[in-house]
Length: 428
Image (cartoon, rainbow, N blue to C red; front, side, top):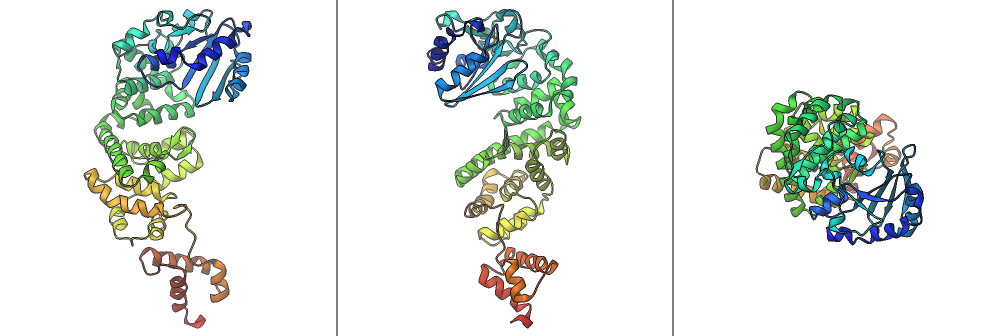
């Protein structure tokens, strides 16, 4: 907690807020205090004030060398990003600070500090005993109707329970069950982000929470409950396999962090496919369409949906060279790395055995500038000039050459041209 109380950002804001008396005073609230009490790193800060804090937020941005932008202009909610920190500003959501805290989601997020006074442990404003709930590892609603006001808070609470190892208090679980039926009307972008984050938690507690709260059945269908053992096994296998492959081929760790769209990296996309496919075949792509994933994510999920068990044997039989591996994978999915990792995730073997079969192929892909873009060995212009091919004949010749390269019959451009000329002796 001392690191938070002495944080230079709070010192800057405490001094700056005196120049903006129209805000009515500024308070630090929410997750930053929770994380500081748990000795977790703090990078996201939430500030609130009785009146519009926008002028203060706009003045803070240049002082930190960052930038300011609106989150919700009608509600006067804005954000400052600078130096790796995110600072959100909003007016009270109720007439007083106490009422504002009571309108928040959970007690562990309903604590505050008044930046006008000295920042000490004793100055913590905690009307709902969020600090006590943290100490006893309890997740408790801040008020009786907070989940009905915003059902997405159900998923946020399940994520907190999983990430922070909290037990959901019985009345709060009952409130989740009562409000879960309202989840489908929430914005798809908000739903998918919270589910991605639940799936990313190392523990499987989030999955159990999805079932117990009823949120999982509402969002993912009735098959979730009976699929939990399979999902849990896949989640644990994914974490182990990703760690094993990252150790064997360090580029894998970089690939897993690559963004697909905002809030979704490759690791989350692959978990989405493998976990939800255990609930119902085709469910990952169906939900992705309903929840407005990006076109790139949809294309990649469609490719992963075409994986069959025999692909593992085909992969092992490929020549030990970068291009054949990438070209072979591109026949099934737009991203070869996605395909290879998912083939591994779907194998029912020990992670060490899967690593031994996958790591060498992944290292081969790393030799290519971009495994998703592998130009043909022979360009269409050469086929037209040397063989007189046009239109579909060019495509047919390049498809034949691709198959030959995948099977190791040609290895470079010279061999490719010889291969084609040998099959068209009139052009020799």
